[in-house]
Length: 230
Image (cartoon, rainbow, N blue to C red; front, side):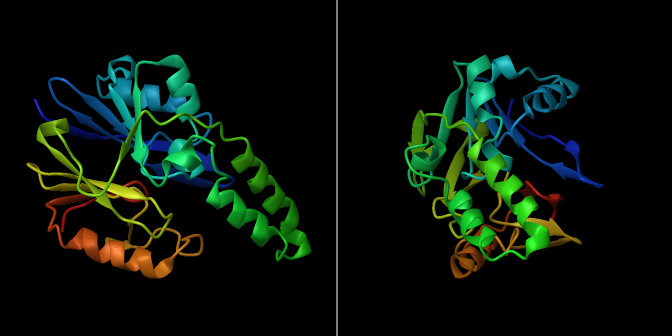
């Protein structure tokens, strides 16, 4: 049994309804959740999994593609409730996820705060506080570009830096499915760089998007946007 389940987590952000797509890899021995939503999203993750006849208690790993709060915000609560679950992240992202180094997104937000017009400063300060309140979690397993795991019949870790320096994507080898994290987003049926205004190195992000396309995946799963069948 090798399955890929894409979760649909819908939520309100101000007046706008949004959706994120954490992904679950399943085989006879492993159940791997890739990214886990904003702070406070654990109940939504649990509900979405239950709707797919899955149970968070059966997870063996949670892989975090990068340090951003919409990808690791609920990690602390997940690990607290299900302490057996191994946290997986890239070697370069691990210090930020574990809190050993200050979040680069927070550094960016604080630097931008000084340049915001007066009418936007309260929103900027609120965003900084959201990032400050993300609770760090120790990474159990650090991975690097090219590492291969037996999850779902075999997966390869792909370095897709740019959005953050240690961002990773996952290629499910047998099924030829690419799970991009924020290395790509799906907009109007096309792959684009996710949130280019927040991307820490745009040139690297563009190179990573090109790298994803070289795998000629049959499906590309984007955390923001959903599934593309090229």
